[in-house]
Length: 173
Image 1 (cartoon, rainbow, N blue to C red):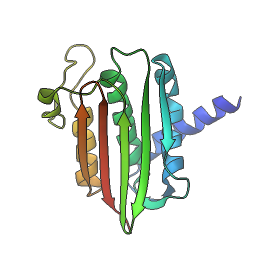
Image 2 (image 1 turned 180 degrees about the vertical axis):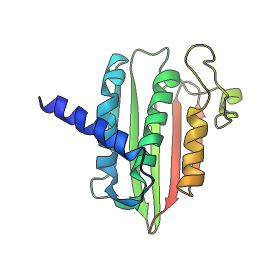
Image 3 (image 1 turned 30 degrees about the vertical axis):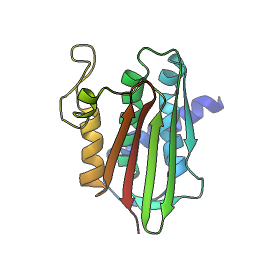
């Protein structure tokens, strides 16, 4: 019963927040936890663990719905690409505040990307999964949300056989 209630709460938050463009104060750890409840089934099916390493005391004023969209796209992208030939994997999300800057790190221990793919990571409609579920928009959307909506920066690093990481840097007040 408790799991069902948490899942329903998560769905409600996601559906409401993704349609609101209002800035508000929210807890970053809880924000990430809310979205992960709705994705647990897909992660369990692929034996992927998701570790929320965001400190529980980080509270920011920003756009929680945009963070939901970013998390969802990053997790779905990792599930579809990073772990496609693996029997298990791990995704870690961490954050830290230094002065008026927030840094969020999303990393996986998946297969990593070859240079040709990495170089086109944020190019709209670029996909290695054309015809089998890939639209090539996931990472382009993440880049747009971070740079245009949140006025931040996103960096990526990937090593074949090691995994991929994304660092999102934002100014907070």
